Length: 233
Ligand SMILES: [Mg+2]
Image 1: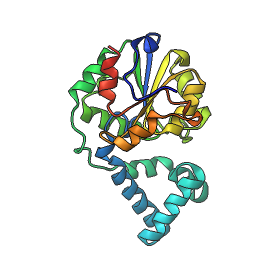
Image 2 (image 1 turned 180 degrees about the vertical axis):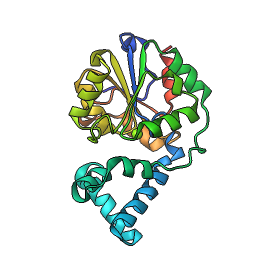
Image 3 (image 1 turned 30 degrees about the vertical axis):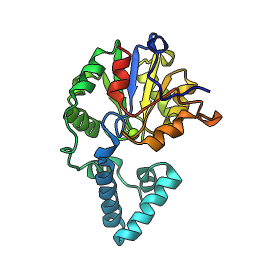
Image 4 (image 1 turned 90 degrees about the horizontal axis):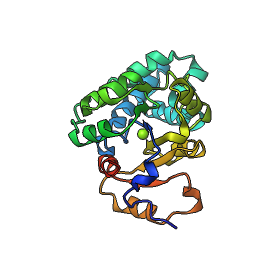
């Protein structure tokens, strides 16, 4: 049984030329919590659309998320909502909680090969967040929920679409994500998988020091993306 929270071995990543990053809570830290703003916007959207009280709207929003993988999928299926209209409204948020991260920028820039953002959000949202971090210029492409035909990760078809669109050879790729379930398909496709957990969260890190068979899809666990990447340089 290996401790996956130990620093990465360079050799283990020597073959990697495709670097794939989730956006939210991966490229910027969990504590920034942009999702709280997006979540509130979605509740307002559902309330306005269906003329519901906020608590009713919230219940339905979460039900759709649970039943369909995203609130959007439930709204499209049950109410014929225009996805672009919904996504624009949901992402009207304040990006000022994100600060430029020079260490992260240098580390990403120095990685050998191509870098991608692969998000269940939108290109516009990813651009705004990456611009605030000062890392946008390092990415070859942003693959978003629109490119995924509104089928979010962890659906296998969406990873296939990402890989074929960008001609990513998955056996030469590494994927960075904050949601363990989104690393299952990447691992099966031969990618190195790195789970990002909240900083200074001893309990979460400890939980990953003792792995079970259920965790086989996670190769490494870190609470600092930039420290992890720098260890590879
Ligand atoms: Mg995320």
